[in-house]
Amino acid sequence: MNKKMPDNVLKKEISAFLNRRKVLVLCTCLNNIPRATPMDFYMENTDENYNIYVGLAPGRKVTNIEKNPIVSIGIYTPLDTGKIQGMQITAQGSKNLIFLRENAEEFEKAQKIVRGTRKLILKIIPNKIEYLDYDLIKRGFSRFQSLDLDHS
Image (cartoon, rainbow, N blue to C red; front, side, top):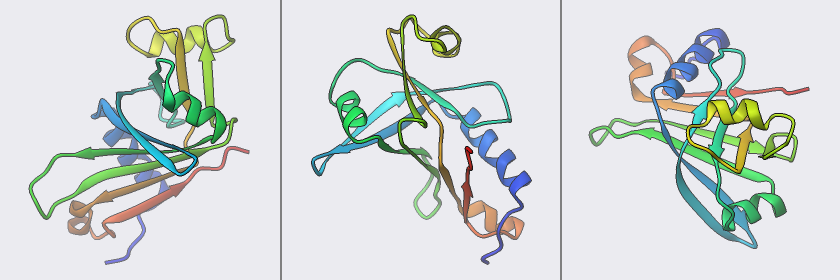
C-alpha cells in the first residue's frame, strides 16, 4: 500500500507521536565525523508548529551546529521485532536552528517550555518530518509518510 495520508491527518499523527515522547537522538556532523546525542526534548503546546526545544551544554554538538547547521533527529518507539514506529526530522540553516542564550529575545519563552534552568537552548524548526509506522497499513495508508514544511 502506497497511499499518502492527507496532510491534515498526518499533522495530527505527528503531533500525537511527538507529544507522547520525551527523548530524541540529535545527530550532527562536522568534517565527516558524525555525533549522535540522546537528549530530552520539549515541544510548544500548539498544533500550529513542530518546534522542538533542547537544553544544551557547550560541547561538540554545539560547535558542529554552529559550523555545519544541519541536524537530523531520530525518535522511536521500542517495539517487538518486525514492527517499527519512529520519526526522522531534518532541519537546516541558521533560520531553523536557533541558539537562544540568556537575555536573547525568545529565551524567556523557551525557558518556560524547557524544564530546568538553562543557559543555552536550541530551538529546532523542522524542514521535513518523516514518519514510519507499520500499523498505518491496517488503516489503508503507506507505512512511510513524509511532511515537507515550508517556512517562507
